[in-house]
Length: 241
Image 1: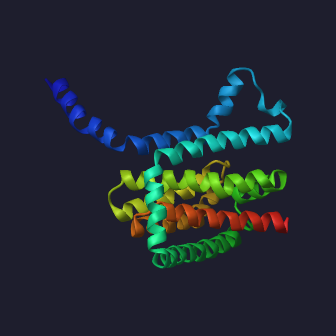
Image 2: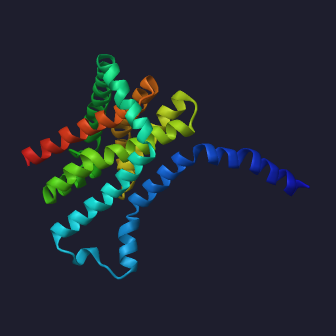
Image 3: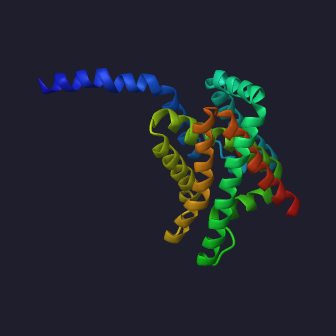
């Protein structure tokens, strides 16, 4: 009897929830595969060692893989992206001012908290930032592509659009989005306990992007601002390096 009740509840609620939110769940799954280098691991399973491929062809292959993920995401949300672009065209001044304000506030909090943390830890940048700068020196064009196009689209679709679709409370969504975004930039680098302080600056920018989405209901805006933000930072490193 209890099994029948569980089955009915599963059919009524869980199946319905999955059906309603499957697109967001697929995006999160794709991101987990992307972060785990699933396709590269797949190549290894067929005996293809990426490390044996010369640098330029190897970078080109990574770019093709990245592009495949992004094209898939854009096709999944094609209608929503187009509607967002039209909304930006029709309300350009309002959308531009709102986006700029969110970005500036995020940058201020990010910069101030990073400065305070750097004093506490006695290091200039986070481990993530140091690794990114090192990668920019090794492959500047690829890093410009992945940081300015791939990462903003993927991260906004995961931490903003998908979480926004799954979490109905505005402020819980903003905090969860910021926390997840902040952790993403910390946990992959074998952090020491105090390194988790860097969740604050990264998370503050994530919260700013999340607030922008709740304010405008337009995922295209945080994608564009994220792209501009990353492009500026990468170009500074390329030119200054």
